[in-house]
Length: 286
Image 1: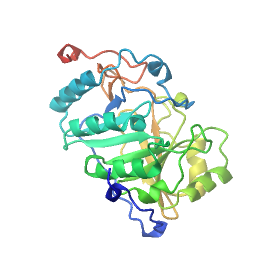
Image 2: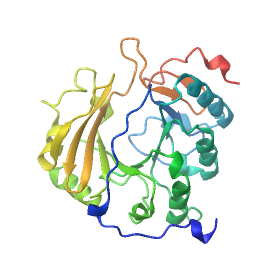
Image 3: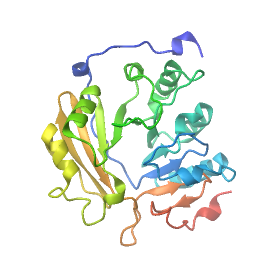
């Protein structure tokens, strides 16, 4: 990496940032779990047990699965999650190079840094791949579950990014206001605790305490289009767009397919409910 690859810190005022438009997709989302360990221990992660034994993980089969999904849904969203996709930058580069440019690629990450992968190195990696990434979803929460790098990294990022925050029951108006002030000028996505959502209440706001908490701080702008098992509510706060995202912890409702999952093994599933059932196309994966 040359010195030209390292981004400069840019203290751009929040009011000068232009928030990008919301993106629509074609077909169900394909979520692929990074086939390498993250060494994190986030309490809301549904995949801890999957990463305890990596012996069956296969990036080759993950590539084959991505190829199959591309043939079926050539223009849909692909979400790279984990685990931690940025735990292995070389492997992630290969995955990004493999996904065709017709897809919207999203990366769920904590932006991990260390002595080798400094903030500047991580930012440079993402900036070099800005044309391949629709958005980087950065986990930041009201409590610190992992060691976080400095917020200075956000001023170095040229790729679209937004802050993802899982909000738990003990959140107060003061705590949430302080969090939103910390990330003023950024896109912020607040997520509910999945374990309390059902098909009966996922679209409801009347008895949704978190919705009313956000509404007491932010200006409500309207509801996103209802999908099969999820929806979102859009708010504005100072220079930020705030999205309250609600989704069920499973996607298969009435026999219809929502999200499709590529597990770390490279095999394809149709559901978030304990990974559902294998699809009958797995015999195509070598």
